[in-house]
Image 1 (tube, rainbow over the protein chains, first blue to last red):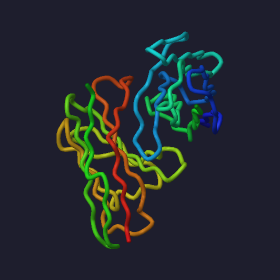
Image 2: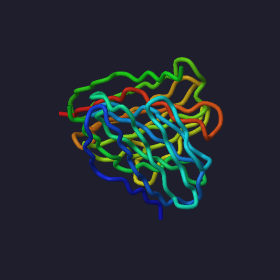
Image 3: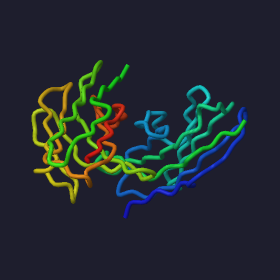
Length: 109
Length: 116
């Protein structure tokens, strides 16, 4: 079957660094997306990894290990506006995104 | 770039009414568009996938006669909720993808539908 495992909720302090882990199982694999979703809003694309390794984009970085079925999203210099849910969405053999419930990140001053 | 416009943002209507939601890609051609619904604190649930000029592919359990999808051009898809009832109340979100299948989906702002 297809499965995504992320922590339900995490708390971090403004200015700090946080890493959100994701393990997944899919039928085939064609890359993994990370999206940010603020409460009551639609998701916003953050990153896409298809090869093993780290992709850096400003304060956000995403890592992928295909052999381990593992990815993480690293957020640096946290800001209050980073409080949101972060969705790890791997793709299957048909490029269909598999959605979990995501990780709710709470940033405290 | 990659802007997707969805409207209306909010709809409140009486039971039995049909509601049409529009999804437009403003600055790219959307080869494929997706329609999702999301209940509070739950994950996105894919309802259907549509490619321009062809019939939509519905996910299991989604009634195609209830949720009519039209993808008439490379920039516009519509979802019509026919004879809506209170259980259809939800957050409906469209997304669009251009080019190859590995391209990201870009989402509209969503439509909050409340059926009285």
